[in-house]
Length: 335
Figure 1 (cartoon, rainbow, N blue to C red):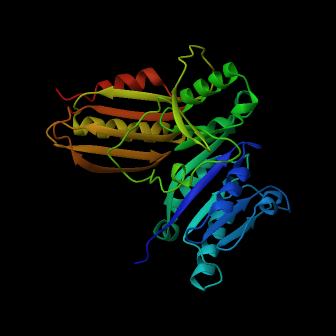
Figure 2 (tube, rainbow, N blue to C red):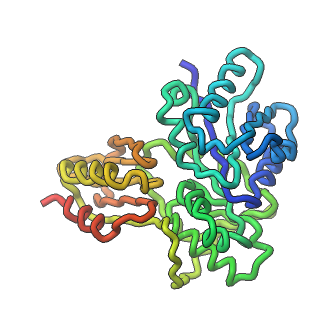
């Protein structure tokens, strides 16, 4: 059986710097051949024309609409066509990067890789990378709900144009982004200069024992990198999408199973991303749960060993009844 091809979904609002990031990557790319699937509104794909393709790079344009609007249609067909052309030797690529239009909701795109059986076997969604323009993200979040969705689905958030704002604006942008998604690592980059190791081959959709929560921002520059903690801003924003952390001790397996089933049935459409590393009473291994909307996976991970068992569940969602959910999660505690 052939190994599935890793796919990176690159998203972010208009002007955030997706093409700049890709061009920096392509100028320095010396690895296996890569294909880039470009999506744009209209009959002409302007972004595709701006990409600096070269040897080992195939740029495929998907125009006349947004991929998020035709999950089982044009987008799935485009992926199927790419795989067929690869099988016939027309295209050579070992990695696929999908750059969405700046107005795309990533949710339906992500689900395509899990609900289409043929695509699920041939392609492996590695991570969702979202670019955010520090100079304009506040206004975009105020005016365009899709900007928050793009952040909410992210596994990594690349913050661009920080050099164009003062420190107060930058700190406010970081705090607001972190409130929407505190699971994703935030990386401050300039002019698309971000090492591929920071946004490729992350394995974000693999069931793993890790549940790291972002504590600050990684600052990446040509001369090296540094880490800066968040400034502790106390301002509250009214974004409909927010990250919620649920914590507890050992849980009863039947209760937590029923709780998750009820959550997904009632709120799955509003649960963008969620992941839990759970301690189950009478079970030495971690129970891992990870999902996108109503597509969810469960599996046991490594033993707790000397680590004190504790349960943590992060849900990034919109319009969620947070307090009833906290009460429901607490009621799953083993007696």
